[in-house]
Amino acid sequence: MNKECVAIVNGAAGAGRCGKLANEALAELKERGWHVERLNTTAKGSATLLARNAMKEGKRCFLSVGGDGTTYEVLNGLFPEALEDQTLRFGILPLGTGNSFLRDFGISDTKAALERFDSGKERLVDLIELRHEHGLLFFLNIFSIRFSAQVGALRNRYFKAFGHVGYAMAVLTKLASIPQKTCHVWHENDEKHDKVDYMMFSVCNSQFTGGTMHMAPDAKVDDGKFNVVHVEPLSVLDLLRTFPAIYQGRHLAHTAIHGYACKSLRFEGLGQVDVMIDGEICRLKPLTLNTLPRALRLNV
Image (cartoon, rainbow, N blue to C red; front, side):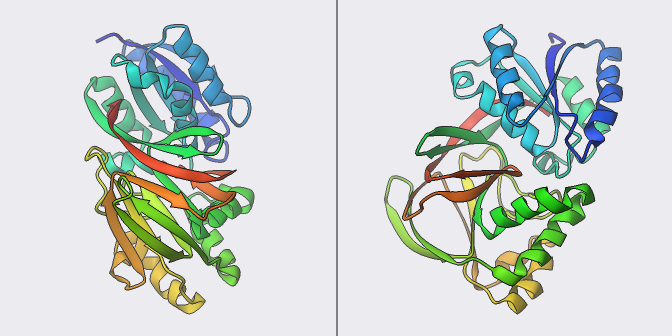
């Protein structure tokens, strides 16, 4: 196994925790025989530029050092070009706030992630492609609109320093103004159509979000499908009663919460909206979501 990699480090991830811990983690990799080229992010979006430039220089093994948002940025520097490249390898060191994606593999700390990355074992996992009015975005974990996107923005602005607890704090703060919208959703080549009244609409490639919220307990990262979790409008009291169940994956038992799997979706009736993608907040007009089966070679 070629032990050379480009480590893209977001020192600001995890409320600055990543910057303090990355040195030790990368030093351990070097002790294990890895040649590590470290690239530090400097601003929002710079991980994408660093990954894109490194790939143009011929680098083919990347390590995302940060949280889910860092991984999202790095992937968008590698794809869609990497779809045609079977030699690209990718790893994740979870030093951010949520670190949701790796929990599907039983990884919740840096030591376990280092062991898996160094082992050289590979797993082909699905990517999700989001087409919007200005182009394409790619993600591993979750796409969500309305309530969860607004909670994510609130958490990033005021509660980021509280880690996983910050998500719950943002939820409770946002309860006073629960948004409700309607859109039309076509499933898998327009074969099925739903008019959806929703307060939250999420598309999950993996099971967890917000660190330990078990949003999509039936999701599999390599089955060629994503899992939709669609929440109809709920009262504040009903949401308060239901919210704790998400940590055990029991929220889908509620009659107003629906979960199902599919390969693609097309939206109609959505304008510019706040979107949460892997913990990052964007404002855009979503058009379609498509699964790219086993498109990423993950060292895990």
